[in-house]
Image 1 (spheres, rainbow, N blue to C red):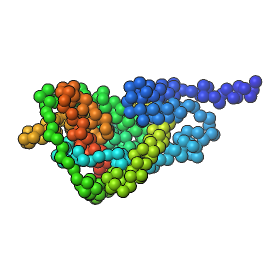
Image 2: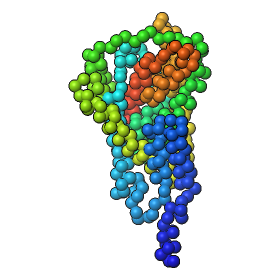
Image 3: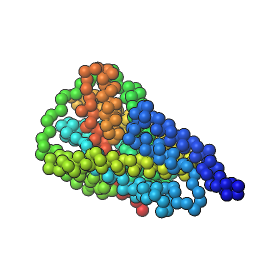
Image 4: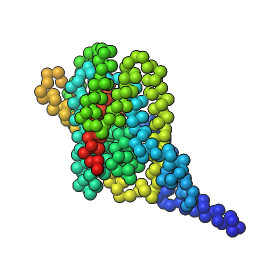
Length: 375
């Protein structure tokens, strides 16, 4: 009986806290949203199950959690903690991305740049709430709606906030179809939503090959801190566009990125232990994240309206919402809202231009913040 009683004291039932139980419920909600609503299932399902795993109480002296030196989960979490996984994700994204829409209409790049205003306004808000400059920089990048970039920058500036920032970034990425449409409709008129874009011009193979090389050189020279993210993004794109490395490009955009996504999502979820995650700081981060995402969406839409004051060929302001770098979900939302107004107005190809520009923009912003705030 003594042995039995000692064993019962070591079970998770005996050491479970209300915080652990709450995080397990949140993990189950993420899994439910992924399966029933198809909200970013490739991310929310691994994060949700990781949250369940990470909140099973462990025994003192046994290396089991992501924070226990030498544990299996700690080794998997190394890629998050040291910022290894995000550049690898960017390699796969680059191999999947077609920059033709952006190259055919370069002015749409400005919409991707305008949407990054959410990053800097959120940074100011975080400073006002008492976060350190490094923490504020890591929180602000949530406004770019780019999970890998948010993880990469928080790993460099505020490692203790990685879990909260990563979950906030991916949560809002998953909620793009819920958050963006009301903002888009509020800031535009029906006449503006009905604007039709001219067909994109044909982009030559030479342009597609030269672009990733030139874009990397410009971005890395402006913000050396973006070297790893932009470098891997453009390297992946060059694999795709060169036409001589099809096997490598195929691997990068399928098996490779899938493996890294599994490790990243599960590790991030496992790091959300109630003892470190359920804090006033985390709640503030989620609030600031929602604000930054909304500001980024509004910034892109309003800037498109501003450009229309000076141009003859009008831009459909809905395209500004795709400036956040939630690829390709925000572009799909633009297509969906556009079709609601006019079933024959297809905006998806045009929306991909500010969408991929937003990916590059958020990576450059992360590099700038890292360069400025590194000690």
